[in-house]
Image (cartoon, rainbow, N blue to C red; front, top):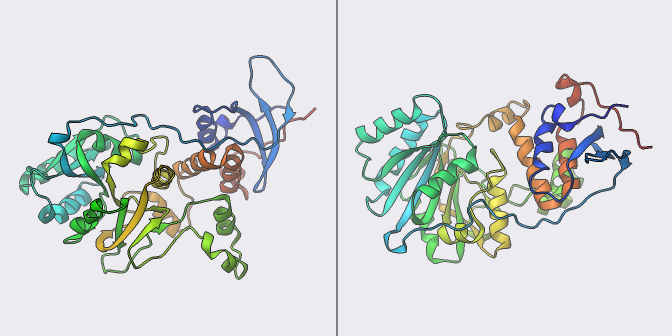
Length: 371
């Protein structure tokens, strides 16, 4: 029987490539799935031909991989107190609205906004530069053009590398910072919290959930199973954590808007660029928590988040349409990184079960012979 290579299967090819990333586990040659259950028959790729084997659950410790640039340089005497990084990908109008909301909260010489154009390949960067000049924001805002679109994490890393600051505020382009929100968010710099998120809300003021627990295999099971009354027994394991008061013991907060002290980057490195979009915020907070830093929530700092303005994932979720491939790739990377190879495969199985093979135009794969 011919084995099916993961790289030949839509979406699963993403996961197959991830497994070659500094992993002690040999790359998969084939994997078979039935329903949402990961079947344990695999075949190794080696230089010497070997018979297929039945493999068990291969676990790898969730040791923290160092970021590409774990320590940032710079002269402390010339360091800015605050740098705001706004990421743009073909959303110049949203960026202009975001900068406009920051205008009264930016002090030239003390705070700077870096707009990273994530290789939009259109007129976005030119339009944003024109808006900065036209509105008189040049003393505190400028555009940096990335030659490639490496995703959310990579784009924000470009901005963080560009400026030397004590505190970095990562800000989505589809946000409007309410008056005084930046100062309230930055007040955490003198306290125990090293990563802080504001209260995200809709334009009419209704609060959005922006504080969360870490995803685990159990949280995914609860989410997928729709356990009803039984699920209420697992409320402590639901990812979303709705809060209305200040908290400094969170797992993670949304990076639609977040303030991060420089020392965190110096200690654990930048955002993991292996995530194109999604899960990079949870991963970063988890690395920070392991290193001993605290994650907090500042509800008095209010920021409007026009959800879905920069990504199709939330729009597709609301319409009950399939999320893009990079979401599943990021989810697989997260679970492989923190829970081992077996959970990564299980996540891929969960995400692509229930007839996804036929939806992708691919016939369901056959099992690899075991003898």
